[in-house]
Length: 121
Image (tube, rainbow, N blue to C red; front, side, top):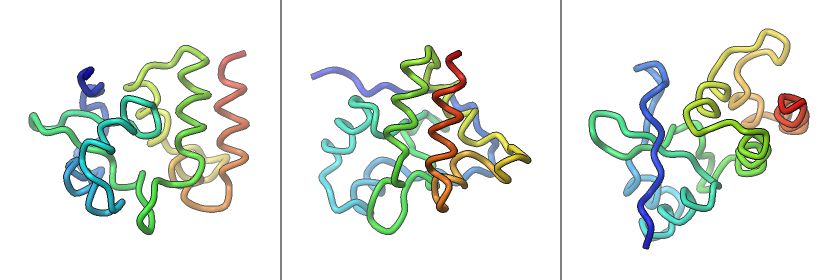
């Protein structure tokens, strides 16, 4: 079994985080399944104060935010690492408006994916 990849804490201290056992509970899964989701790139985790956490904004109504996994994959395929992806997802963009994760949580996932794909060129 491989270790769980974790980015450094690159987000602002006020970004709400959810420990992995709580992520599992919110998704109705066992924590080892959440570990696998992180290894598979469907979620990104980071260490905050020594604890593995996932940004709470990645979760909505008992599921991972629609389009998040695909966006992570697009960015990874374009050479971005976990901390760069986290930073991009939480960086305000006046043209969206808001952050890419806010747009994914709304109805603008297609635009976020388009931008993620274009970032590689």
